[in-house]
Picture 1 (cartoon, rainbow, N blue to C red):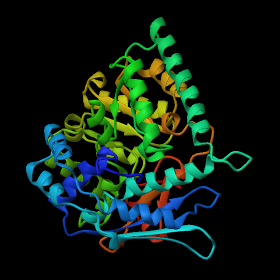
Picture 2 (picture 1 turned 30 degrees about the horizontal axis):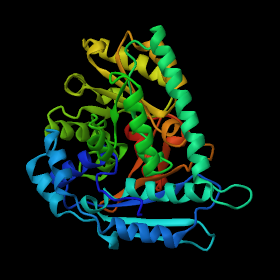
Picture 3 (picture 1 turned 180 degrees about the vertical axis):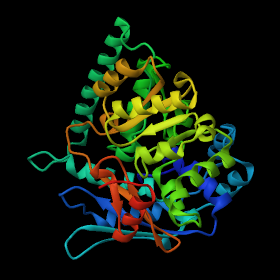
Picture 4 (picture 1 turned 90 degrees about the vertical axis):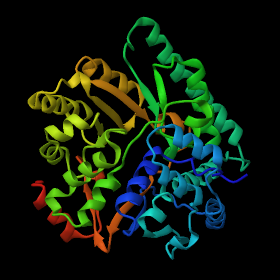
Length: 400
């Protein structure tokens, strides 16, 4: 059975970004770079290409479109656009280079390529994970891997249940944000079903995967990604105004729902400089993706205080490689000061005893010009063009 069988099997923020791209930037062209930080080579190129072929045959189903329409976020013209939508194979090319490394070219109209990235990442991860699940004798042991995953998941649920009984989890909330990291589509379904059945609904509050949100009647979680703010570095505004313009355009499109914004595309300090009273009032809160999470949240709280906004009315979302132990520690420190939610990714969706991949698609070019990100730690800095990286640092007053 193919790995991806629904175009809803993605991250919710890809759909929200697709709508605003359709409405505001339908003629923009982009290029993505596939990045793998794993030393081990990723192969099985024929299988990968067959899966991409199948992905490009999919269309949104009527019940999926009815579900998206019911959320009250997407506009009628976008729903009808999705009714006609199909990923075009000509925009993506996957091959093994002379160094036996996987290379993927993904470029074309932004509206036609944006929905490729998450499904292709999940396809690569699932193929890789399947072949990693081989024991020393050379026999496939996917069942053994899943058994180990179930054991580890049971311990996590037991850990949370015990803390819940003692009252230590008062106000604690988390969501699944692990689609891009998952061991498999099947495993993500297993995890979500068990979390829904065994944990209280105010503890497990939803998933960023709209397919599973629809299937299990859960809230959908997510708004935008760094890609949205990065693209504005080449969309006609002055570089130093690009972040603020991207956030204001988001408000114009969505009127506050969904309303969590990314805070580290060009560093958190530069974000706070742009996050004025207008934006801080209209967005529900911010998402942490790099740097120390506790100090980030303290600075966010101080910023709301400075603007005269009660921090408890705003949200702080943590999802930078979160696990439950770290999340609970942060919760105990900061929960009385601001509304906190945690997004758990790898720790839920790829904790089965085999090493996960660390892969992604980075937006590197928009309308023929370079774009980049400068997160709050070195692993979250990327830009193909040194001159553009230097220009970003100068525009946003970022010190080396």
